[in-house]
Length: 217
Ligand code: B16
Ligand code: MG
Image (cartoon, rainbow, N blue to C red):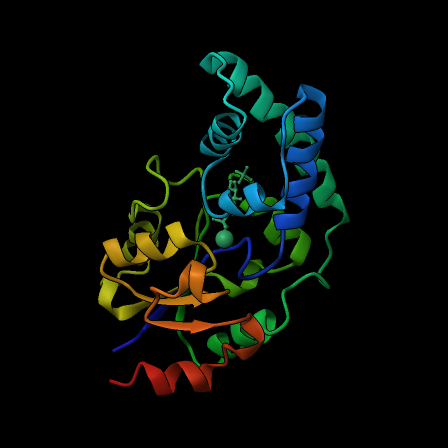
């Protein structure tokens, strides 16, 4: 029986991909690296340090860990200041409605994000009240596709993985949900999240009615 929901943040609750893109692009231009939307899409759901390594590999460049960490911090400073522009109007269509519905029906709800800036994003959206548990990039050390962040959420909710549905927009996020034994809902195209138990093109279609009718007891 489904008792809990675990939501990824970026790409499920709100669309920060464009803000991440602008911050990485700013850094890449300064470093003379090639960076475009196609590479940006590969960074969905993966950690900041893994992201800079993907960009470096794409540019066939190599740098020591210390320099990499400094550059990742530089990107993060740009990204974090861009979050000041985010408001409670910036939910992805359908996300706020689903979160509200889950609250009124008494489900347990956790956040399961790879971002170390999740708290700031939730504050900007005024979304804290929708979550019983906050799992973010500071909660666990192994990031997606490892299941740790979702297991953190289910343990804190005192639920078993097979009592929870994970919502994810990233390929690595669906892989993580499956590795942990969770049910999964993919948000996005088949090529990215087609391996989820259920998939919607966008959060606007992900109503509690649709979800309940798919995951019947
Ligand atoms: P930060 P999610 C992920 O968040 C993003 O999708 C990914 O693009 C980003 O690199 C990662 O968070 C780390 O973010 O630099 O803010 O710690 O999709 O897991 O909510
Ligand atoms: Mg995401």
